[in-house]
Structures are given as structure tokens and as C-alpha cells.
Image 1 (spheres, rainbow, N blue to C red):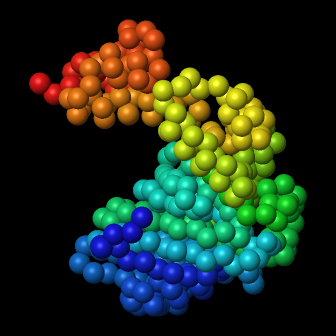
Image 2 (image 1 turned 135 degrees about the vertical axis):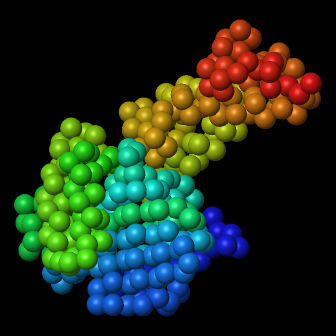
Length: 328
């Protein structure tokens, strides 16, 4: 995930102070009150922290840097401390337990919730405008500020195991985030305006999450689930010549059909069948491009008994006929 043009910031998971101190230590810049500002040519990083209560912080980040910034987090081992992140613009690449995922504005993964019980790395792409906010709070602090949300917190993280969720930002939250970043860049009244909007967003976020949970639209994954799914993904990619049978895969890996389907969709944002089909077509494309295989050979090798169906699926996924891929 790293390269020669990356800046790596290492920190222990926790409140806003950990992030602000690690940022200044690695990249420098000036600390003015609650804000760190780094400006180098066309590059600009502006990160503010707002404290509502002891152990309840909000981080507001605007990043457009000439190099990739990677944040490596060490677990804080606190089962009662949580991190709710929302991205308003751009995308953040995340890696935990060897699983790569994107939190991206305007997508089904615009919100990322987790407890700090597992190592976690995120990457901000170079020369890309990224806007994100993060609530960092203890259960006790949330109980003081919004006691009615404790039930939701228990439903999400009550087993005190390492766990994470991705879900979408709805239109109401999207509008409120735009307003927050408008206030965050105001010349006059920035701190009270941004703090107030950040506080306004919190109950709307909690209500949205509760609604999704009640409708069984919000699913989290334990680390055991992640590891199992990575093995299943590897199994699928190693058996592209076979037909997918969800019941057999579920039985082989010791879970129910419904849990397999739900967890796979949660982690990879696609169905098993679609993932497997696209993987087959990716492999078919790779083989055809070498010029060493005919369409017939590739189709049969990947389990298709009917070459017309193979060609139809290839064109549906890749947008061209398989014969057009073979170099002349």
C-alpha cells in the first residue's frame, strides 16, 4: 500500500489529540488553536479538532497534498471507544486484516464506523481534494450528550469484539456536511458555526443508523468474518473453471447461506455470483490478450460448455467481443 512518494503517519488510535500531534510531528505546519494548517505550493492540509465533552471530539479534515498520506493506526484496546467517519468529498483507501476497501463520497460506503480494537490503515490519494469528518467518543461521553443513542451503540458494538461497518450517506446528511465545510472555511465565526453544525449532524447520523439497523440494512463484520471472507475470495479466484454453488461454499466454510451472502455483499459491495463472473471475465481477457489462446480454449477452460454464452457474458462485462481482444 506504500510507495516512495508516500508520507506515513503512525499513531495509537484514540481522540483528536493523537491525530493532531502525529500530523504535526510528521508533516510540520502550524498549530493555531484547534487547527493544523500545512501549505506547500499547491498542497494544502487543514485539520481542525472540536471538543464537545471529555472524550468526545470531532475532527474536520481537508486534504489536497502532493504526496499520498498513509495513516497507520495501532489498536487502543478500548472496547468503549468508537470512531464514526463520514466523507464529503473524494475517497479514502482503507486496509484492515488484508482487506482493501474505499470510503468514498456519494457511494454506498460514505460512512465508516469502527471500534479501535484492530490495526487499521487508511490512505489519502495524492493531489486529490478530500473532505472528511470523524467523531471520536467514549460510550460514557455519548451517554452524557445523547443518552438515547446508547441502545444503538450496544446493538452495533455490544459484544466488545473488533468490528466495523460501511454504509451510505443520505441526502440530508450530505447537505449538512456541505454546510459544515462551508462554515469550516468561514472568515468570521468559524469555530462556533462549525461546532454547532457538527453537533447538528450527530443526531441525524444516529437516527439514520438506527433506521438502517431496524430495517436490517446495516451489517458489520467481526475480524473472524473478514478472515473467512478473504479465504472464500481466494477460493473463488483459485477455482475459476468451476460453477459457483453458494450452498457448497457456505458448508465448506462453516456458515449459513444467508450469512455468506450478506457478509460478502457487506465487504465487497457485490454479490458472489457477480464477483465470480467478473473475475472469470478478467482472467479470460488476460489470457486472450497474450495471443496464446483461442476463444474456444479460454471459454472451455473457464467452465463454459456453450461458447455463445461465454461470448455473450464477455461482451456484457467487458463491452467487446472476445475475438476483438486477441492481438492480430
